[in-house]
Amino acid sequence: MSITPARTSAALLVLAGILWGTGGLAGSILSSAAGLHPVSVAAYRLLVGGVCATTAVAGAGGFRFLRAHPGRLLVTGALLAEFQAAYQVAVARISVSLATLITVGCVPVCVAGATALRERRLPNNRTLAAVAGSLAGLALLTGAPGGTEGWRTVSGVGMSVLAGAGFAVLTLITARPVTGQDAITSVGLVVGGGCLAPFALAYGMAVPLTGEVLALVAYLGVVPTAVAYGAYFLGLRHASATAAALATMLEPLTATLLAVAFHDERLTAAGVGGAVLIAGALALYYVPSRGGSAR
Image (cartoon, rainbow, N blue to C red):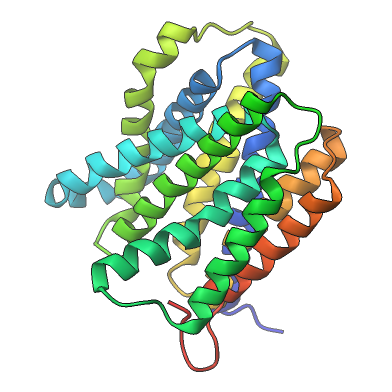
């Protein structure tokens, strides 16, 4: 069986989805091991990942496109900062699996709502069904974290929704392709880290100089950030829409499996039902039908 560009791109997108799914657990472990606030964890992820990704893009000569899109660069950085900070706080407040599932489940709801307002018409039936499934799944997940304090659950769910909304806005902005999008995203990671740096410094960014902590910082910045984004943008060049959708759906699946296996997290029956509903809604929303895209 020959290795075609389409197969290579699909494999890269699958890799990106799996690597993204490890970010929440890695950030949670780093926060516990180093005593870092979630905002500081997010800042480290963006700064380390951004420097690595930017170095790779610089070697490929990608910076020549940045001057044409300064506004997009700044907005990308700000949204990445908001998304990562809200997501890491959500992970700390509820759990890796729930925060990831709620965050990703909110994206199609927010995108569909914003698109309907912009175009002044209702989404098609397929999109409406996906949104309904996501909302039902989110409702079940909201009541899933048994044993946690009420305010932590409410704030954790709220932060997850905020993270999902930020990623949805970023999705809408990047839906219009521009030359040098990989460079914009790479430098945007650094910009996002810079946006979070003042808050992270206020919370404290000092970490124990142990091998475990330094390895966690390096992993969080390199693997689920620099490498994952690099694989994603390389994969988009020749991939089908179905393969791109798979990358999106693999992230919450990976995060949930890792959290259950290594972080002793358990979903209630309602949580499992919510996860299944969101997975189905994501498949319905992202994977195009034979007649065209769901969007």
